[in-house]
Image (tube, rainbow, N blue to C red; front, side, top):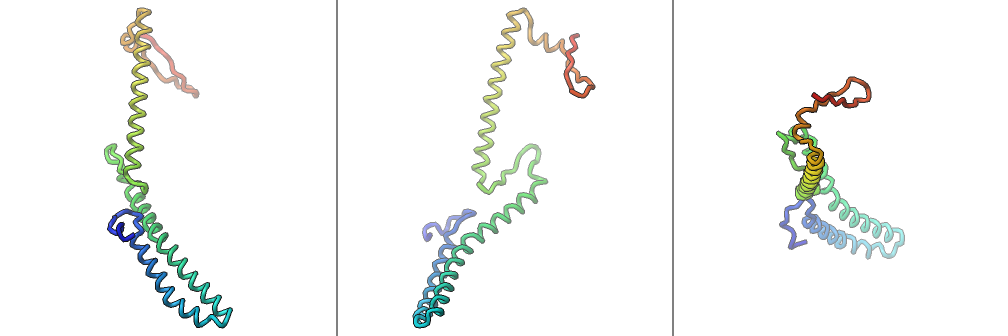
Length: 163
C-alpha cells in the first residue's frame, strides 16, 4: 500500500487501507484495556468484544466501498450530463468506468470486423461481375438501366423497372 500510494487511479485504495490500519490500531489500543477490565464480567466482555469487532469490520467495509460508490455516482452524473454533447460531428466521446482503453479496443474490433465485411462484399461483387461477364452482361450497364422503386403496399416489396 505504501509503494502504490501515489498512483492516481479511480479505484486506488492505498490511502484508505492506511486509514483502515490506523483505525484497527485505535480499536486495539482502546478495546484491549476495556477487554481486560471487562474480563471478570462475561456479558460485559462479550459486549466489548462484539463492539470492537463491529468497529473494525465497519471501518474496513465503509472505507473500501464508500469511495467506489462516490466515484460511480460522479461517473453517472458526468455520463448523463454529457450525453447531449457526447456525439459531436460523428465523434463519440469515450466515457466508460472500465476505462478508455476498453472502449478503444471495442471500437478497433468493430473497425476490423467492418473491414473484413467490406472485403468479403467486394469479393462477392467481383464474383458476380465475373459471372455476369461470362454471360455477356456488363454489371455497370445493368446497374445503370435498373431503377428500383418502393411499392405503396403494406409488405413493402420492391419493383424492378428496366428502362
